[in-house]
Image: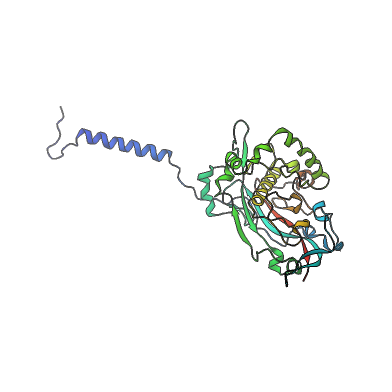
Length: 354
């Protein structure tokens, strides 16, 4: 029998067992721990504001006569009265004026599957990339409740008041809306209501009503109208051929392609920001004197210009227009991308008066 050396006293058996248990526990913890990985560059290109479709700015109308002709206008912007009657900026009493109508580039929106990816800054990662641990390692193939998969997109919203920065007379005539510089105004990575359909329904309970078959059947009319002319503003729960506005979350059905699915997510975000009063109504007779909050978004108030991955320089795009008109035929060997970026043009109507 081996006996311990008198110069090397043996450890108690209970202490040996305790050390072995600690070693096993540490080994298991390190095996299952998620070691942070430095964020890598994502999809995107640096957005050059000069390379935009300036056709979206037209027409410019002063009263009933166009100063600069351009594409047609939706019915909402055609319903104007000449002369208009609004409170004077000098004395406050109602005075007659002349309606001014134009379109202005107002916002840049990014739709990305990779949290924190700044698409219009070349795909560089931001501190929001750490939110990957919260939203999952990948935002693709996200199940939103049984059965089919989907994709979860994050939205980044930049204020982009080009006319105010340039000091154009058009913006001065209609008075700037409090934005004088470019700014990152909203990100969805920090918004838990954007990540889950059930929380989005709790945020907007009308989602239940507009998911019924009878209300979805009405969207067929909006699909046709958006394809041949302009979206139907009264059917605010529809986004034409793109899908349904509700629920107001970042989850899009996987049956949509990247171009259409990302555009639908953009529509959801715009409708959501309008619902909480951040994006006011700026067109129509009620907005002639001043923009005002409206929880129901006016789809025809916006023109959408994709700037990544495939810039468009054709006729203006409205919410819900079929992608066959603007995204179906990319150039040969054009690299695919799951992220998108858009320049949003907002219609403006105001009463020019003293």
